[in-house]
Amino acid sequence: MTKTRYSLPVRINYEDTDAGGVVYYANYLAYMERARNACLREMGFPLSELQRSQKLIFVVAEASLKYLMPARLDDLIEITLEVLGVKGASVSLSQQALRNNEVLVDSTIKLVTLNSDTFSPCRIPEKLRQSLEQHRIEYGGL
Amino acid sequence: MTKTRYSLPVRINYEDTDAGGVVYYANYLAYMERARNACLREMGFPLSELQRSQKLIFVVAEASLKYLMPARLDDLIEITLEVLGVKGASVSLSQQALRNNEVLVDSTIKLVTLNSDTFSPCRIPEKLRQSLEQHRIEYGGL
Amino acid sequence: MTKTRYSLPVRINYEDTDAGGVVYYANYLAYMERARNACLREMGFPLSELQRSQKLIFVVAEASLKYLMPARLDDLIEITLEVLGVKGASVSLSQQALRNNEVLVDSTIKLVTLNSDTFSPCRIPEKLRQSLEQHRIEYGGL
Amino acid sequence: MTKTRYSLPVRINYEDTDAGGVVYYANYLAYMERARNACLREMGFPLSELQRSQKLIFVVAEASLKYLMPARLDDLIEITLEVLGVKGASVSLSQQALRNNEVLVDSTIKLVTLNSDTFSPCRIPEKLRQSLEQHRIEYGGL
Image (cartoon, rainbow over the protein chains, first blue to last red):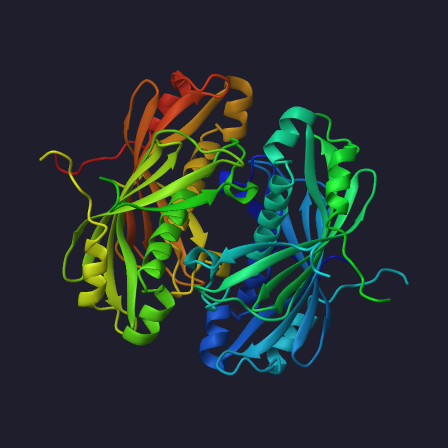
């Protein structure tokens, strides 16, 4: 049931922590982006290539985060990604930070695709859309 | 009507930008925190003092952001703060990033107050609560 | 004797600290850059304008830092800048992080000026060179 | 001849870049730290464990960097580490950022070991010193 879920391991370093001894809260947004980009790269669509060949860039339009438990120095956490929906020029994701399958941070991210020259909406190419659909979240037994 | 709104100027440096030529999206959460801490400091409650004398720390429980327009290198933006509500051990804020009164990023942040030793909820001291109430958002004429 | 020295106040926030309770060591390089850009802006040469009108960008070629004392949460520190020398397409600076006139970090930074299109060396315009010379370090009693 | 050299792969993300389209110069210090900590972890001395069991922390005393070539979005670079020397309570390292064996950034870092309670120098434990010696730089043909 979790085959559709992409997951990236992230090790917590000093650079990630703050004086509270835990990961600084803004850094989870950076981890979420790392996982998105790593997922796109594995699917054959690295960001730099999308921009070069198709003038397509992803821009975050909305982000909602719930902070449930803190990660700490040396922790090895997982950043997951599942697609909630793909439209013509936007995609919505569920992303989590997990430690031993415990949810530390739960987020929903909405991205829009823009033309890198005009910054107007840019339709998601069909091949990319199909690849994203492979990570669409599955709802069990409902 | 905006007397209750706290505002902190923030200058955009290279460190804040990304290869898209705009402020990296996670950095707005850091700016929001800068404004919160500067506001607390001006009200006479610097974070380091709250922790030392009262073992009280603020922890972000929830954050929601809408990204409307990007900020760029050398921009001078404003980060605002208004209190939506204060409860026993939590406070909800509306925070915005503005450039010439245009909203770039709109956010709602929920913070909880914890005891820095036990990490259990810690009641907001009465004086701090009263100071926070001075920044409670005003609804015009409704 | 210190009239030539440019100084920028920097407040330490949670985002700046690490789990050691002090400012993360890489962040001082960001503060040094903030002071350089603020100094250029006050002299009438904001970075974004230099790039737009003259295709000139500053790039750090060398940086040396000595970490003497740590800065902590809520500290108000000063980042200073003095010019050690200006050549055709490079400038060397002495930059320090100070707290109550105590040196926390002592650094020497060498910047080169490049054409933003070709990335080849770009001669520092005469007016900018003269402005930089106003911050040339003074040696007492020699 | 390079068996002694530790190396950590680092992927460049948007969070790492600046408006110049390249990695922000301060971030290399963060990468250098990632490689140091990963190396210590692989040798059986994770930072968090050293602090917990021996009250030992590493603090950077000096850092010198030469920036030769920039890294860009999506680049996969390598951060290397070789030990230049180990003393009672300090260790000097040569660290580089490489892309396809081309040196992007060349650095020398001096770390001191402190007691995390007293912040006074703390002798490097013999087992840790021996492990560090395994990464001592080799000089060819001498």
